[in-house]
Length: 162
Picture 1: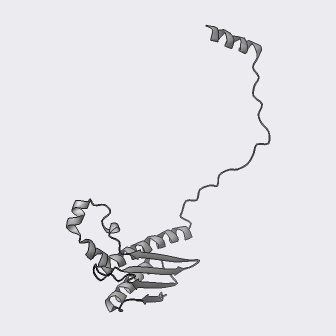
Picture 2: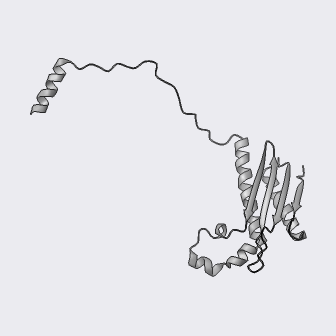
Picture 3: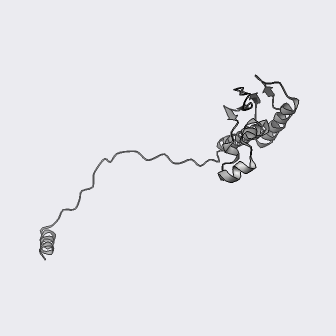
C-alpha cells in the first residue's frame, strides 16, 4: 500500500530536490511502520531575516490508526552539537550556516518522526511495560498491640536506674 504524501511550501518556492528527499524519507518511515495512512510535510520559512539568513521550519503530520502524530522542528543548532564542547564546536561549525541548512532541519525532523513511530508501534504491539496500579484500600480491623506485663515494666524501670 502506498502512503499518500503531501508536501507543502507555504512561503517558499517549491523545490523538486526537496520534494524528492521528503518522499524518500517518508518511504523509509513506511518500511519502519507499514500502517501509515497519510503523511503531510510542511516546509516553511517562518521569519524572513534577510540580514542573518532565512531559517527553516519542518512540520510532519502522520496519520496512523487511532492517532495523529505531529512533529515540528525548527532550525536548531543545539541538537546538532549537544555533546561537543564550545571550543571544538565553534571551530567545526558555522552557526548561521547550520541554521539555514534545510538538510539538517529535515534530517532532525524525520529522526524525531522515526522515534515517535517506533514508540507508537511498541505501544500498539503492547511491548511497553505497564506498571501495576497502586493498591488502595483501608483496614477494616486493627491488630491489637500486645500489652505490657507488670514484670516487663519492672525490668524496664530497674534497667533505667542502673
